[in-house]
Length: 392
Ligand code: GLA
Picture 1 (tube, rainbow, N blue to C red):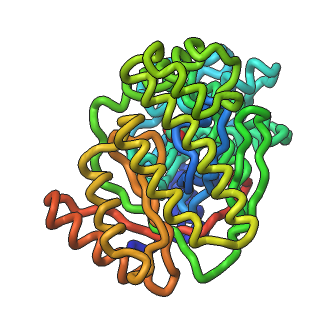
Picture 2 (picture 1 turned 30 degrees about the vertical axis):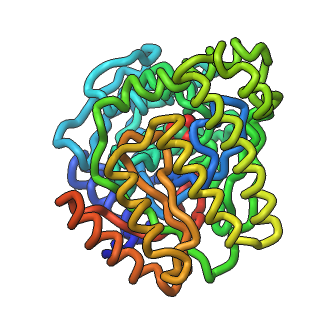
Picture 3 (picture 1 turned 180 degrees about the vertical axis):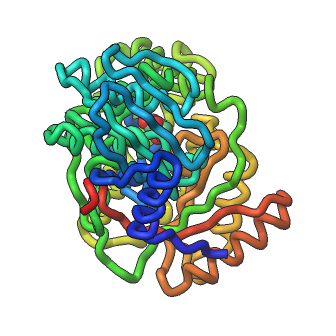
């Protein structure tokens, strides 16, 4: 069934209430940053490719206030504890784990010469965690935006996104590309964030047609492989590029992959196939959207999913089942296209569909997925939403 998105202003009020309750403080700085979904361009942000995510209508909110000390007292809805950070020290990786996203971002500000004043803060989220929707990028971008408010400064948006990406690399040890933090930082209502990952420049592409919407279906599974699997895929692409002998995947053609097929060897040759194909599909998708041709996205999304499943091997049974159900509903049932989204090994699918059939499609996805797996999925719709911002 289609789950409603919690209203951002309700979430903001609940965060302020949490702060008052847990830390007895009245908020005067509140930051919100969204998760993201990727329409197309998967596992190529670290290959100089193009990706086309957007900020979803699900947020992480941080509400707080300076406390006149050099300590941060932070709490969140996910645990009862109040964690204290000593801001006179450069932040390092520490426990509990969830604080590392904040520590990493604080460290980014410290490395830029900022003295962070003490503060109290409380965190609340409507971004499902572990669902491939970048709750970690949302937490990083919300923290960076909160610190901007606290320090009364504004970072260049690109610099802010890169600072957050570095926090993910150094403090969560995930060698991610730039997609998630860029989507959370640059997102705008009715706009996709088309990112040229070679130049690091985002372009806002209109997604205004109200006849189409995007369903996000969370499989509710997160396979163990995810931790090492991502880094191994990234390594495969780096090794592949070295064997082909080019300095960027943008200069690699299908013919280059074919002529190096044996020297690339298994499975790197198939990984290379995915990268080259996905870059070209994303360019085609952007060109189609520029013509307001939503229908063209269907086959491109289908080919993207098949390539991620067969050649890049980052899908899983549950993602394939959700995509198969959407395919069976088909164009007549209102589905334009469906594919896995994000890093994979579990997480969510993205289904582009007709807005007036979204509820019906969600009901079928939910019933059929439950029948096949015994798991109740979480399904919600989202149009492109506002990226990281200070509230009020
Ligand atoms: C994760 C990473 C991104 C990107 C996707 C796959 O979300 O954080 O940088 O590589 O996987 O497209």
